[in-house]
Image (cartoon, rainbow, N blue to C red; front, side, top):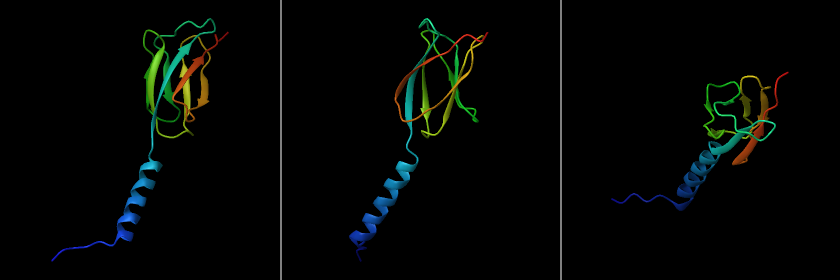
Length: 102
């Protein structure tokens, strides 16, 4: 005996899978952290506020960080500089400039 599923059930299941995938959609932010003179800040910390997710910048001040939601807030910090907070948004690339903490 063959089991046949009506096309409506198959379509509904496909739609639900698509919605679930979209709700959990993520993207990667490729960024750079710079000082006021456009110099790289190697070892700067870029983290998602309120979580343990974060990375340190490489020797060129570059980083890659997975963003789960555009509402997440990035905290960018480096010793001797003011911490910067910005919404992650939907951007795929960004450059962040830190100012000296006087």
